[in-house]
Image (cartoon, rainbow, N blue to C red):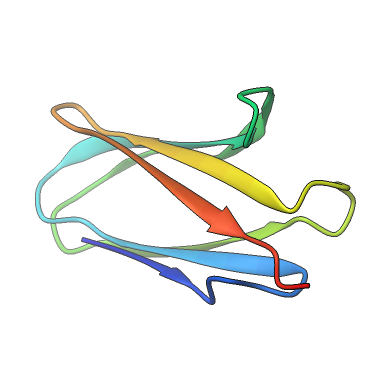
Length: 84
């Protein structure tokens, strides 16, 4: 399960991941144009584990970002927007 908040955000956004099954999980951040900015999580987690990771976008001039969450069996993409 995933919560991304706040969205839109001022300077930072939080990703809260609750694992429904044991898996490796990775969260990558991209510009809206697809340029890779970095990885904010790369970890093996167990069922029931909860992780909250903050992405601080203050150093980036972009107003929209994409994220990709990859587990052993799933890939999820989404968009986060910086508030103006």
